[in-house]
Length: 255
Image (cartoon, rainbow, N blue to C red):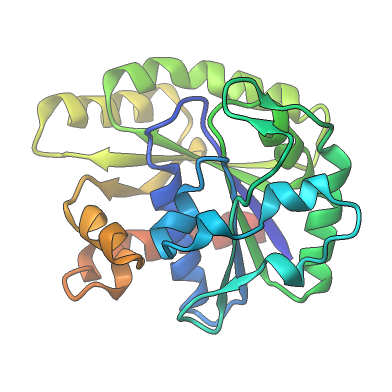
């Protein structure tokens, strides 16, 4: 099983959008995919089904010593795609974060997912590289970094990469797949300049060629609780996620 964390230092950069649609891109190729909502806001679950706020999930698993993975898996309309919602997590406080130690629980979760026969486990994390997000990154094989195509994000990226280098001391095998630019508006000079600016300051190997555009279809798909590829007019955007999936597979194959 390949485990990939979807992480960023700040919120609102499109982590959940990337996680949901990348999971769909892998699943439609026949890979058995588990998408995990490790963000207490529960955005992944809400993007796929409105019932997940009432269900137990990832944070409950971290709290429990005897909860099974099967008990928190939610099937989707695709046989190859399953979801673990964020859940209730009694030790999680939105103001101060996760209060209990989670490293062992995250390790047990990843091992259980592998034993269950999943090919890909995508974990959408909360913003910031601390707490549970840090514990996730210590366990996963690779990390993908969504970044909004806007000037402030470009300037903060070196700090994000430096933070990941620190985490690699705890997980030497962590593969930094690179930055995927999101909410790209090529027709807007500031957005286009931000894209080119990031590509100029980072090595080619650290910036994914696929670019996720800002598009109303993401809002429409979220309202319906489906990935964009399911939408009748989603073929163009889906193509970028297919390109992203292919890039990731190539990077992992040659890592």
